[in-house]
Length: 73
Image: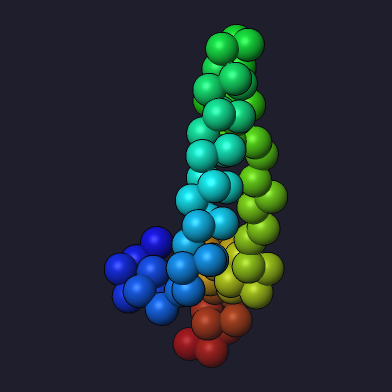
């Protein structure tokens, strides 16, 4: 958490965040004590690509038909 954001939070919110952080630390410790891996702890992330960007990328790299240009000469 950045310093400017932390400064704006109230004391009760900061206490709650601190307790959540401690609980999460205990959960993490128990996870690894039980033989868990870092990959299991992080979990899977659903990565979605920008479809418009991908389609533009592939259209840009398509082969150009040169027959039209050869006929004009």
